[in-house]
Amino acid sequence: MASIKQVQITFDCAEPERVARFWCEVLGYVVPPAPEGFATWDAYERTLPPEHQGAGFVAMDPSGVGPRMYFQRVPEGKVVKNRVHLDVRVGTGLVGEERLAALEAECARLVPLGAVRGQLLLADEHNESCLNMQDIEGNEFCLD
Image (cartoon, rainbow, N blue to C red):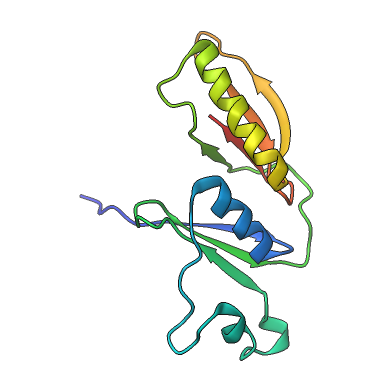
């Protein structure tokens, strides 16, 4: 019997801290405490070689239940559609107009943070409505 494994979600991005803080706002995640011996992450970063400063950032579920998210700096920009994306579950258990209202309310909260609204996909005989979005660096995700 296979054991359950924890997973980390890793984003390649240009500005790890900026993207991590966006996702903290989206998901209610937090930045973990600075490493032992450092009062802040900035103090820790200053001890790294210049090429490693700002190269990565972490967001985590404060309850410890959700996956850790790691954001790493890469030189290339995003050029194609994601093969994997996050579904942010804001409409779970809701249907019809109530679900659409929940999706729209969350979209209205995220757009001022830098998210970009995409296409609203209305419910059909197989799927509930969802709303395609992009984060501040163009990574696709859905409000579901």
